[in-house]
Length: 119
Image 1 (tube, rainbow, N blue to C red):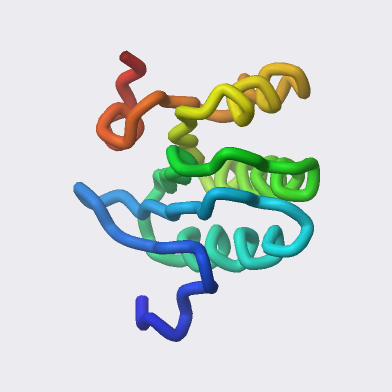
Image 2 (image 1 turned 90 degrees about the vertical axis):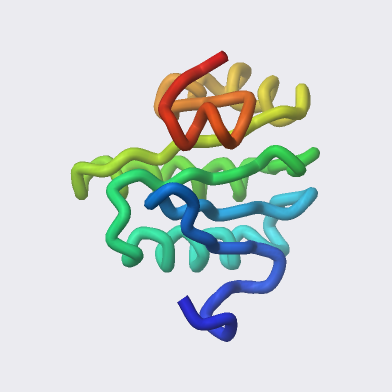
């Protein structure tokens, strides 16, 4: 993907044949549309599995969460899988309290997410 197509604050790379979208420290209404654009770009990469590396994300509001849920539905409808890397307790709690954690594969490390192994 050319650098101009990568939304500000969101990195898109390929690791071990999977597309990885790296998110910034905060996801909220000011950048949720950029997250959506990054996830849409990742879906067109040809990888059935998209990993969202949220390991540095400290805060995600309902707008960001809604964006992730919608992306999960689209990826799933296309026969793919959206995996989240979550390390911070605030983001883990948000996923648990809202009950959406079961919609995603949630992993504590990028390596685990890439290989589909929770550890």
